[in-house]
Image (cartoon, rainbow, N blue to C red):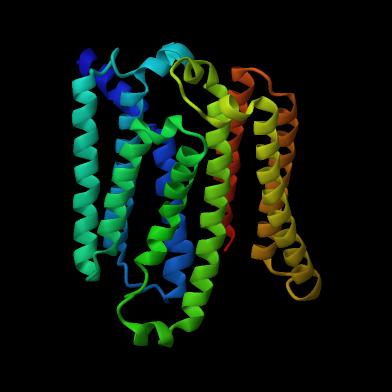
Length: 319
């Protein structure tokens, strides 16, 4: 029994269950707070299909975490030996089997949803996600910027996949009849997918800065190794500024809306509250990034970015 419990705990750590919770929460809120209300509670993607697709997304992401640790064993032995799981608690053979089972489960569930929708787009794109996660872990993670971009795109795919499943893309008449719905859903998708992409890109570079000691020994050419710490910080500050400018624009628009039309609109006030919290978190991130110099500093920034992303996800509650 103790071995079973030990294996279960190791498995949960291996698949990064807090990150999987973020994926499930993002898709759940986007579906029930944005997609479903826009279609009057009856979007093309049914509630059952949504839960199948969400489970598929979680399974594919979990498989990605497993294969990433599989290929990172040597580097992790230097960067974070106390957090290693593969080779200690779970064998390499079991890790590869878990990766294959999770990937196949995700693709099978996606195939079921695709058949219900009468479109293979979701299946093709989720298959591409599995393939890219494998390439990222084996090759691109060690390269300058391309690995960071791949992971950021896959993070934004968590939101975009629901947009793709919301319409019958081969039925142009339906699209023309729902132009307002399409436009509104498109705006929300771009907003949250862009947020996910930028925050993920920042976090991936921060993680590279945290892991650069081990990465350097194994010939990686990540941004902190290739450009140096100072240039990497400039890159991060630029993207933090982009986030700040975007959030400030939204905050001004919401403030004007309250002043002119929605002074008694409780939802608008909640949106402003979330925006203020996001600004406070950005300020903390900027201050910590200025002072960061050693791996433990970047580890703290990475955790703060998780909290920042969670706050961004929760803004859907105010819609």
